[in-house]
Amino acid sequence: MNQNKNIFKSIITVLGLLIFLVINIVAGQRVLTIFTKAESNSPLDVKVPEVSANQAVITYGTQNEVQGVIEYGTNPASLTQIAPETSSSVDHKVTLNLLSPNTTYYFTIKIGEKSYDNAGLPYSFITSGESAANPQTTIPTNIPIKPASSFPTLEPTVIITPAKLQSCQISDFQKHYGAMKGTSNYDANFDLILDGIINVADYMECLNKNK
Image (cartoon, rainbow, N blue to C red; front, side, top):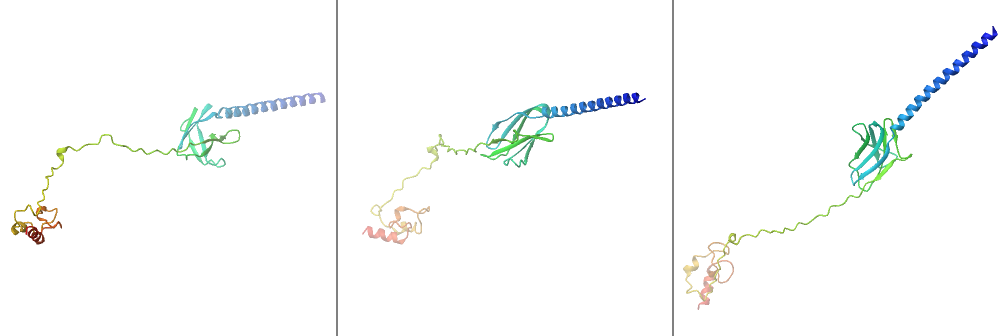
């Protein structure tokens, strides 16, 4: 009777060990599967192939098709800006816009709930300096020349000195009395004192010159 009990205990012990081993094997396979899946989602060959003053392009690859998010900023301890991908892929390309010139930016790649960095530190790049555009002065090579026919023809003004006046007729002066230089009735021949207006003083000057 005691022998049977011992055999039964041995069987129970063996079954317990087998169950324990099966549970451990299944659990280990699950852990391995999760670990392998996580590794296949890890970003590979992370690069920043294009950097300008206000823009940068980040590329990386993954073994599985995933949709990642770039978390970035100017403070490596606080990456507050994000640039999500629009679709899942194994070849990833993300463009960061509205960056500041001459600035160091840091970033990590978030896939699922895990953020990936560069061996414990964020990836980084530096934007280029903003080149000021040099203003160019355009010098016209073909300057239009106005045809000579479009210019008014100016008749030469002949100024008659008092000596050339045949006589100092007051009636001739009266025709221009009050006429100022630049008006239609002004005649320089009768502005003998050259004050820009024709009046009786010019007539008196004519009389004095012809005495």
